[in-house]
Length: 116
Image (cartoon, helix red, strand yellow):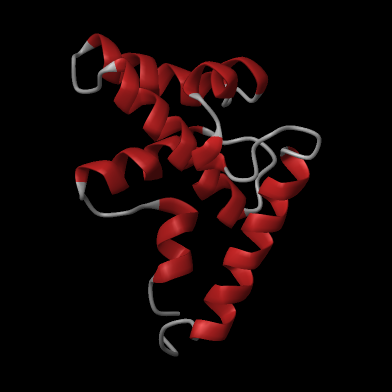
């Protein structure tokens, strides 16, 4: 391993993610994922089917309430933006759930923040 990513590298990734959000929300009153109400987010920018199933399972098992599910979806969009995905997939949703639970990250998000 050669060490963690530099602050400059991470800042560039964050700027790219913000630009993705600005493009996605062009022509709307929203600028970033956290601005979008849950109803609009689910209707206009749904996650993949597998990602939706993960959130639905959490709702059915009472691990999430509807408001927290919306937060997870917003966070999944932010993870997807950092990963360069056009739509959050199951891995992005799982990363959002891990961030909420405070558990170990997996997938591409872990690769972004762990030493190389």
